[in-house]
Length: 390
Image 1 (cartoon, rainbow, N blue to C red):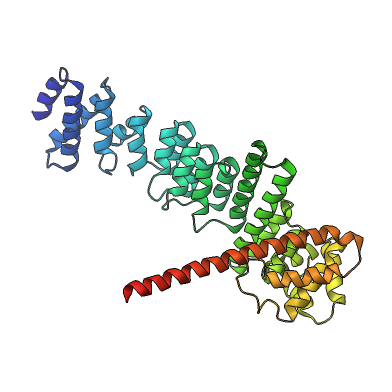
Image 2 (image 1 turned 120 degrees about the vertical axis):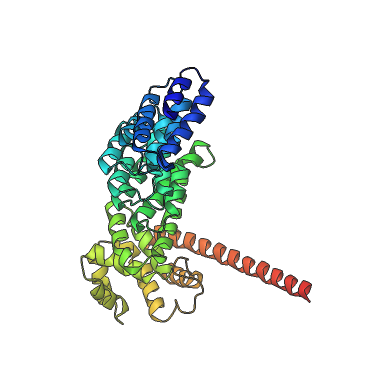
């Protein structure tokens, strides 16, 4: 009887009132103790309301039914095919959809629909893969920020490939704890490329100079990433660097001069195609003949061997132990020792190496000065706090 009165009234009521009444009808269907006849009548009325000309009414129906497993499937699927503002809450919340439904909606839906699906709790891996492949940047950002989504590493890589140049997506990806080390390095490389292009475009630096600075910043960040990663993750990073042409003598030398022995040995192991235990033995052996053979097998430029040899000798003598800092920061005294030893060798082909070492020395000195100043400021603030407390 109530539903009959509702159907009579709804034909002439204003849209806003129809929407409010529709929401009440849907909640009554879900939560009230209605008789089977009344339930059937209420479902029929809601099916009729799917044809209401006002989107306010259909949106009210979607909002009321979206999260309920007891909602009539026919109504849910019809609402999911409606305009994006109506389909979005249903696709974001309804438990009635299977994975295939959601994948199809991602492939055919408008950007708001894709974003709504990306926000679903416990989003399955297959749906996340579809969003990573064809979703808009907005949908991919929502997906990356959805900590309940099951995102495969390949899907992460695909989003980096498509939208890694966008700052919002890049920052969201870098904020995830489950991001693979190689993927994290790709994002850093993309950031370096973007910054180099921006600086050159503004004519603040010429393109070659901007690219060199960006490359060295990327190498510095790569060593830092490796230093913060588990040992088991370093080899995949090394392989990625080799495939992308980033596993250069300069990067490997930076790793050694930063005290990142794991990255250094893994890089030589990859390039020389030797077990890392064998490489480690040659690196820490007292002689240099085996080290020279290892260096040649790795295919590194012969002109860089003196710097590697002097750095390894310094490391063997405990040079890393006396240096402050972690395995992500260049060690100033170690660099200065290597630079002094290399400058004593009168070899013309060493000049590019000496230039690189001087840049390393400058970077290490500036970093050391920054850390020293930070410590002074911190000590001053601590002293002021103690004085005020007294």
